[in-house]
Image (tube, rainbow, N blue to C red; front, side, top):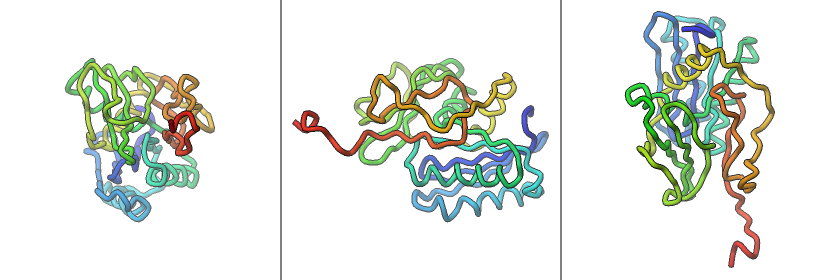
Length: 225
């Protein structure tokens, strides 16, 4: 494993709280809790659990990767803030990875170069979706009604995110010598301009900031008619 040794992975972008700790030469230690309303309650518990079960001390972590979404705002921020706080306290690198990238990465290990669309729950009768060829993102993440999703390949509908795949997607990018970028927010895609898509940089390693997509609740008179 190149990049940071003892890599902690955290994702709270869906209804599960998913944490894993990867050490070179050892099986990953994983803890998952299915609870759509318990992100704040269980994130720290699961992080402490995987660190303890790995036999490490928190101070022995070498880096952290967190899923940045897309996902519902409140739950999503729990994992990101947890990663940022630990990283700051230990002075270790923290990377963000699009949570859909991790799902596509796991699928591509057994189905290389397939066209797939990763689809996760956005609530309000909408879904988040991103298209891929293998592990390559071919469209920026967006939010819409399920019937508005366009794809030419396999639909991975509400596929659970494996935190080990989140870490491995980051490690694979590090092995390609990909570097993290420093930006404070993701710009809204100018083609839409309504918050339903963002201009996500074309790489895996991203800053640990929320990838939050949502069309505005307020409508113009023209949109209501």
